[in-house]
Length: 217
Image 1 (cartoon, helix red, strand yellow):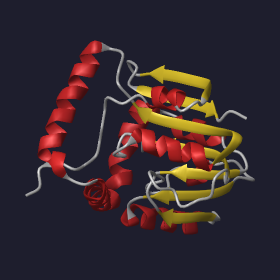
Image 2: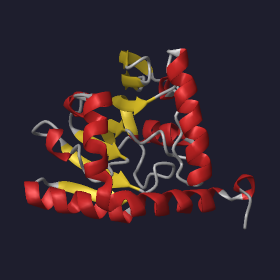
Image 3: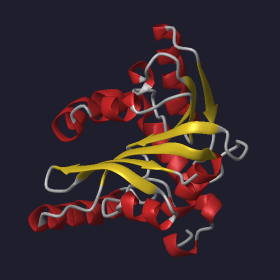
C-alpha cells in the first residue's frame, strides 16, 4: 500500500473521485438537513450573484441548477461522473439547459476569460490544492468577472474548531482519501490571488463563509 504522503497528485485526485462516486446515490438525502441547519439559503445567495456566462465548479448532483437567475448561460463541472449523472437527470427533469461536464477544478478545460461568473459552493473543502483550483477559476474569469464562494471554513469559535479538528482526525482514519478539509479559509487564498472582495459573511461560529469577489480589470 502506498503511504498517503507518497501518492502522486493524480492518485490523490482518483481517490477523491472514487469517494464521491460512492456518495452520489445518497448525497441529496444526506445533505438536506445539514444544509438547512448550517448553510440556510447559502446556495440561493451564491447563485443569485451569477450573471452572463457562468461556470459552476464542483456542481455535484446539481442542487444549484434551479437557483440560477434567468438569462444565465450555465456550464457546470464535477470530478465525479456518478455525481454528474444525478445532475444530468435533475437538469432533464427541470428542463434546464446547461452544459454539464466531467472535469477537474484544478485543470479546467476552458479558455482564458471564458466566463463572466464562477460559482463554487461546498466544493473547495475537498479539492487537493485550493490555490491551484482558485487560480484556475481566476484564469477562466474575464477581467472584472465575479467569483462567488460558499463553504465551511476554519471556525472562529474555539470549542467548535476543536470539535471539527477531532472530526477531521476521525475522517482521515476511517475513510482516508475522502479529501474533506475543515480548516481551510478560501477567502484568504482568493485575496492572495488578487481578487477584490466585495461581499463576505460568516456565520455558525465562523464555520460558514460566503464570499463574492471580483477579478481586477
